[in-house]
Length: 105
Image (cartoon, rainbow, N blue to C red; front, side):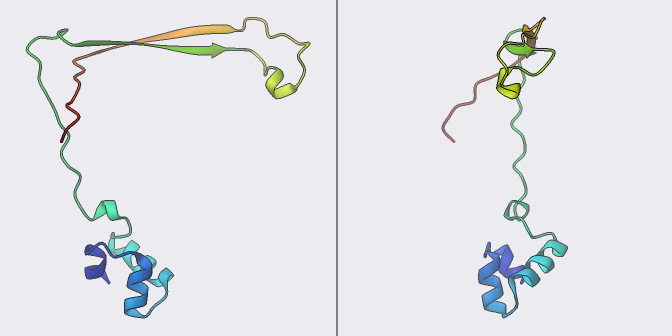
């Protein structure tokens, strides 16, 4: 079973070939650590880069977040009640050395 899974066979094909149920195949391959196809191949190493000086590439991001104290009309169905203090707040983030990778591989 392990050899068939390493050839990327699906569970139902292995079960049919070996002559056991699919749940038995799943249990055996889970025990062997071969239950996910992504575990059959190692992950590629992360692509890293270095920049000559800090601050050369800088990415600024803003996220707008809603602020409320009680559920609004979408939850309660009552449009007569207001929510004092409701509004928006902003979160700012700055990340140094963001780079755009080429799209082609």
